[in-house]
Image 1: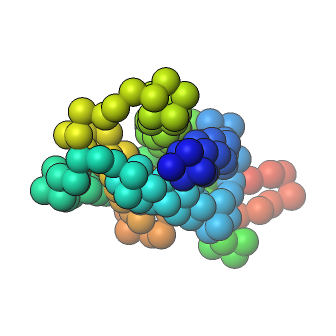
Image 2 (image 1 turned 30 degrees about the vertical axis):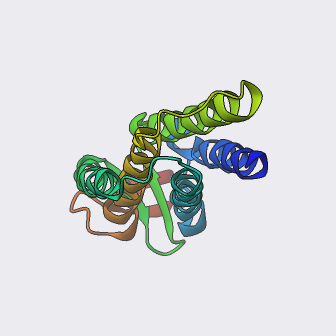
Length: 166
């Protein structure tokens, strides 16, 4: 199990690092937007797989609520899109980075408590449900903000004088 826990920690850390474009307001391509939610899904799947408490109903509720909140959060983001270069930029936002950081904290907590301290889990499946909630939140956010359902998206045109919003 230590191998799975280490993979979860590493993937969560890489997913958090890949979300740096949201804090620095740098335009990013589709792959840069897609990888953090993909890594979050993998991390949540690992945490659900190694969870001693198999509470599928709790996990399902976590995914549904996280996905709904993620879809809503993606709609309210201010998104700038460059359709020619296929880039998306958001104004500085902390919710996605916060969700990725919490997912990293959950993976690290599972690794430390299960493998380093040798402590048994309570068997309630809550950690896995929270991880599923966070992964679904990140996926929902990217679906609405990055793919194009967001009605606040504007085109970016390059001019000699710089970038102008249309």
